[in-house]
Length: 124
Image (cartoon, rainbow, N blue to C red; front, side, top):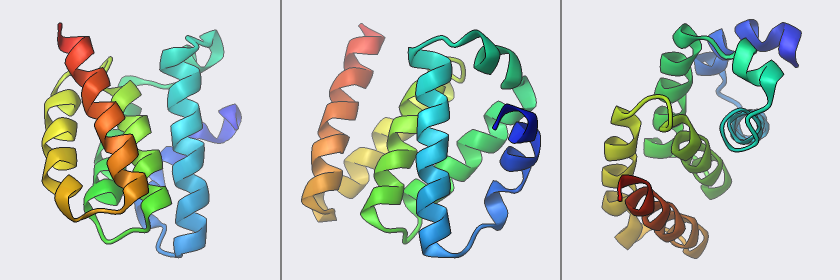
């Protein structure tokens, strides 16, 4: 995955097939966990500044768009970890989740509430 990371990130916005999108969203979630939660040195080196904005943009598009719940939840988790290096993501993520909570599925509500709680702890 590391050798293809640059190509992977630059082509995220071109994915339209829902089943492919779910897999790519999961990969993004796992990469964000590996980079920010686990602090893996290879991922810290591989994810460059220009990748952060592309990743944030695509994950927000998936979270806001008419995607299935799994894609939204994976994007939410990825954005949470991405917010450690891109501060504006935290504010926007909380606003988007709170906006979607009343009309979302149980899975989205569960992950959304946990993410909002974690974001509040991060601020404190």
